[in-house]
Length: 399
Ligand code: DI6
Ligand code: FE
Image 1 (tube, rainbow, N blue to C red):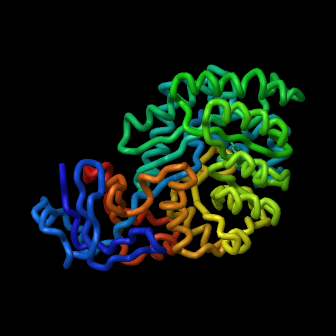
Image 2: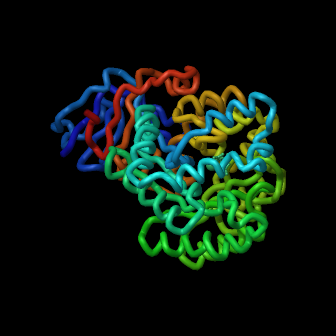
Image 3: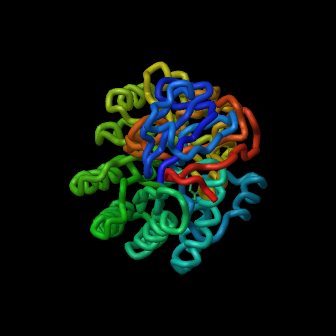
């Protein structure tokens, strides 16, 4: 299988947008072997079967580097509670919130979970994604965390999408461990991580470092276990308060620290030093009607790479659109359309520790998005549209 994609407005994302007007991409197997201007197609690639983008914008396929798309039930009732005045923390303390999803997820069969997750994955894919990171964290027993990770991996077998799985047993303290959170880390979170790793189900380890979840000391115990297994870490940090989670993550050379609304200068400096990516999640900010903005300007000034993701989850971010997340990041946080697209391509790849995708360059996976657009700013500008025309996944044009 080899094709030459022609007549494209290429945003290669190798240096800013890295635009190539009237560009072409040569693909052999699942890899890009050449890209450049139409006028300079090497003779060997000029003979390949051609597929015209007809002047459309072509970008690397998008990457959703932070999602929780495997879960049972839904939380529309909680949405309604919050609209009647309850805060996110009130809902969590009242036994709702994450724990109601835990109950539904434990009760669901693997197949039922898969069917629901596929529907969400399909929406993210239809928005131009070819890679989705999926977290566990609604099982909170060894068996149920493994079940979630198996379901997540299954999505990649059923659909044209690459799935990365993140172990997030340290997401919430289940009722049976109420008041014994360190005990939960020692007897459930760490053993489930070890078991999942032994089954080859884990690409990275995450935790929720927050007053309503796990303390920095508890996260550190988990991260030490991850390190012993040679697994990279990432952290839900500074979402609702500043527990210095980002600095803790940076000490463990974390791939990313995510949310970051309450991130302070010390955390930014630690992330810059460690090369930890800041994953910005405007869907959660929007849903929770948060007013504290993540420190975008300070992250930019410190040279911290910013990624952008849906955080798709039933409580704080029921969104399956990366382009809408990009729009929110621009309009709410004043990220630029370039930063937004870097956030869902090259910087999202970095947030997952991947160097084989996120740009259009020789050697990269041939995962491309062809858009009903001409300029990349259009992707962030439109609200609620799905401007995808078609995708190329692993060198094959989607049916
Ligand atoms: N922070 C979030 O915003 C989500 N998880 C987390 O650690 C919320 C997940 C949920 O409410 O179900
Ligand atoms: Fe999250």
